[in-house]
Length: 236
Image (cartoon, rainbow, N blue to C red; front, top):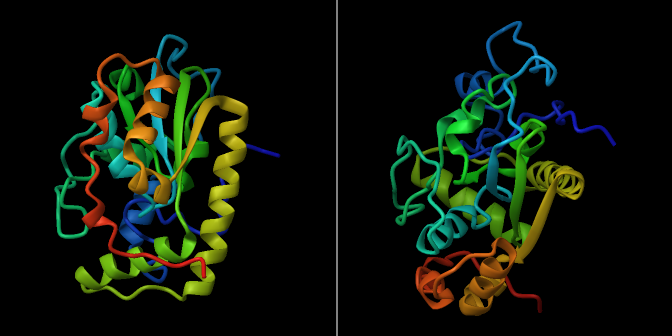
């Protein structure tokens, strides 16, 4: 399977481009790059062999920001530019960086993120270049909750979501592609969103063990706020 990203459907990303019903053209151009831009050539790009990153990934609205907050509490600094501020949809903050949206054609900034936690939503994950050492944490959430959370966020912003069926198909494909990339390029811990909420100390223990972190996992677990799990579905 090729690592080249799937381009027949625009990535949802943190901007929710896909979920907004194929709108957000300016943001989509930011993801794809200027007209005529080509994917970077690994042979001519910067030497990234000494870069080590903790990559936090998952679908939009799956709990990636929550994991970034846990890692920050555990002493892993987040790579963030603060451009996207906390809001009603994510009151604890997004902890992301806009350059991630340009990974398809610009990765020379990655050495700045060395030793940091970097949030890369699943649709953009295959754009990460070869070279760095990647340790990853993938968070998975019931797709029904993801879609409900995405719809609620768009409503707060005055936007309308695309159909649930089209989003479900696209998001499932992005998640499959992300899993494949992680299998080939990263040492990965997979966490389930509902398990992190239900047993945060256990999740913190897993994070510390996976990344070899010092410190008290209880401090890491303390950032979890179950009241922010506002979209819930039952297995029954």
